[in-house]
Structure formats: C-alpha cells, structure tokens
Image 1 (cartoon, rainbow, N blue to C red):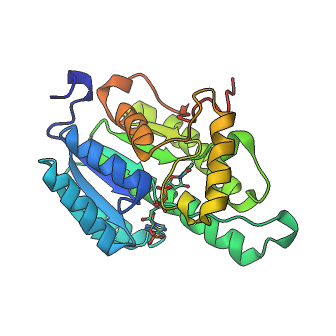
Image 2 (cartoon, rainbow, N blue to C red):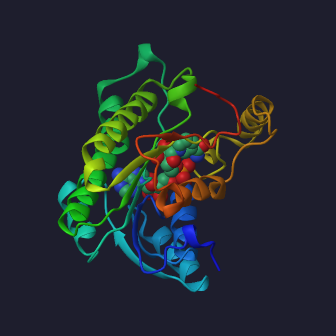
Image 3 (tube, helix red, strand yellow):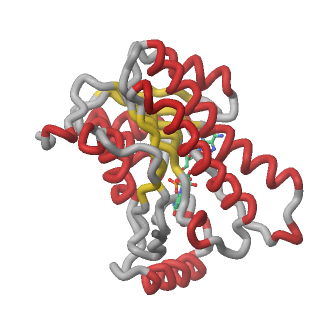
Length: 254
Ligand code: NAP
C-alpha cells in the first residue's frame, strides 16, 4: 500500500521510452503506485514486456507503438487518455562524437529525438491537462551531462540542455494553471543504453563512475523511477521548474 502522498490510484500516466531501461522502470513503478499507465516506444516487443510486468504487478497498462518524433501520432496517443495526470518524457538516444568530427546529420537526429521528442510530449500533455483542467505533473528526462559535460557529448549534451530550458520555460507558463514541470537529470545508470559498449569498456566505465560517486556505485533504473514517482505525486506539490539529480553525488551543483 503506497504512502498516501505517493498514491496515484485513479490517475493516468503516459511514459515515453517505456519499452526499456529507465522508461520501463518508471512505467512499472507508476503502475505499482496505482496509476493506469500508457506506455509508448518504438520497440513493440519491449512494450509488450513492460505491459506484462505491469499486469503481473496487478496494474493496468495500455501500449502505443510510436516514434516520439512523429508529433501527430504522439498527440493522438496522448488524446486517448480521457484525463492525463502525469507525463514522463523519457525516450532518448545516445550519441557520442568529437566536436571536430560531428556531422550535421548526427546533431539533427539527436536534437530530433532527445529534444523535439520531449517537446512534442510536453506540448501534448500540457494541452490535454489544460483542456481537462487537470493539475498534472510533467517530467522530462535530462542528464547529468548538463552538469559535467564530457568529451563526445556535444549533440547529446546540447539536446539535454535544451530539455532543461524547455522544462523551466514550460514550468513558468503552466504554473498558473496548477501544472508542474520538472526535469530529472540521472547520473550513470545501468540500462541497455549504457550496456551497448563492449563488456571490458563497460566495466572500466562503471568502475570509474563508481569511484566518482560518494555512494560508490552506478545507478539502477529503479533509482530514477523513484525520483520520477516523487515528481509525479502530490509529495512534490510545491516543486516546479526544478532539476532533480539522482546521480550518486557525482555532480553537486548549487
Ligand atoms: P534505453 O534503455 O535505450 O531506453 C530508451 C528507450 O527509448 C528505448 O526503448 C528506445 O527504443 C526508445 N526510443 C528511442 N528513440 C525513440 C523514438 N524516436 N521514439 C520512441 N521511442 C524511442 O535508455 P535509458 O538508459 O533507459 O535512457 C532513457 C532516458 O534516460 C534517455 O532520455 C536518456 O538520455 C536518459 N538518461 C540515461 C542515462 C543512463 O545512464 N542510462 C543517464 C542520463 C539520462 P529503441 O531501443 O528501439 O531505440
């Protein structure tokens, strides 16, 4: 039984990137907290897996195979929610290239998915919440890369910095309507995105990131899902325009 402020019974959440990693963990935890969860992703097979996990946990899921860069399709999917309480815009891709080798098409693709895909989800959610006068919560997925920078992170970091700007701007515009908008900026989390390196390289990176953290470990998707649940729930009723940083203490900005 969830603690009352974290109880999402009777609420509806929409999660992009819900087929894998952080998005899947968010979808499952929001469902465990009582929400009906709409799961969207490119990966149909992964979506079915997430829906099965939610069903096994006694929750309710709907699936929407879609590309978040398709604004119209995403809008249609969000419109199937009679009333939307929570949007978690999690879908994203990784790209790494040195600045001097970065091609226009790399930058365009990463901005398209990681920034515009989040923008379209935020727009669809805000329109739905405004139309139904729902005091909802919109959560975007930034990255610790906005705090630390790092070699190769031009495209990815630029898109995530734009997500932070979107979050602050939308929070300011939606606050008078009772709609909250916050970002989560995870540190290094073990997911299929970060497991795509070869095994030796992954072990070296995880050892390095663990040493950088006062907690001595990298994160799990559930670490981020709990941050998202906090922002989705009434427990964060006075929090908007903020960046929550579940990063193991790797970066500690003011
Ligand atoms: P993941 O396991 O790769 O999950 C991302 C999901 O998004 C995948 O199912 C992917 O489908 C889907 N996706 C990609 N492009 C899409 C599109 N255009 N339309 C719909 N779905 C799309 O990655 P993750 O690690 O969970 O990352 C989730 C989010 O957290 C991302 O925004 C990422 O930037 C952010 N983040 C991750 C970390 C980390 O250390 N893992 C740290 C900071 C921030 P496909 O597999 O079919 O592409």
